[in-house]
Amino acid sequence: MPRRRPEEAEQTRRTILRIAGQMCAQSGYDQLSLEDVATAASVTRGAVYHHFENKKGLFLEIVRSELDAMGAQILAAAEVAPTRWDALVAGCREFLRKSQQRGYQQLILTDAPAVLGIATWNELDYRYTTRSLVEILQELKSDNAIAVSDPEASAEALSGAMNQLSRWVAAGGSEDSAIGTLLMLLDSFRR
Image 1: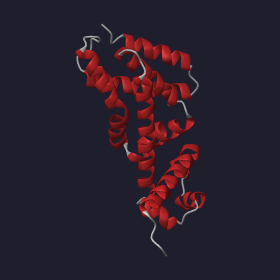
Image 2: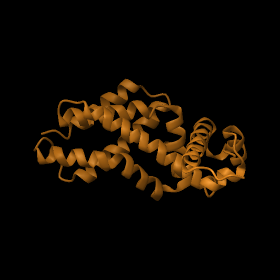
Image 3: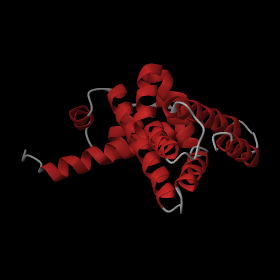
Image 4: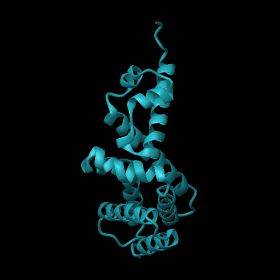
């Protein structure tokens, strides 16, 4: 059998990751079957194991991919804002908007902490989303625009609040109320 070129191998990896991500988002980690992933991706089960050590390793990559996409969307929303403060608000609003998607709720807020463990989930959440909050809060503090003593602690509190507001809206709470609460919380940081 001829060897696959690196581009083909990477395309196969991306296809497996995309399909497995869709399956997890739809049905949850517990329902994910690597055999079903292989069938849906039109590859062998061996190809799945070639790219991912096991089901948990595949899921870790799905979570990283989803959080990376979330981080990119937050930054894109923030980059077009006219001021740093507006960037913070836009990024937080984008998180609340995006995190309402059923797949995000299932993958990131339900399955990831349970499957990967809270320590790994916290590390990933920090790397892909909370760190950008820390950075903008540090900039706003340097500008003397906010009255927080510790931007990192404030970012952790804000991240936790947004994750919980996201869960609350997904359970039937009002998105308008969640955004209003978020804006009130953000305003409490201002000088």
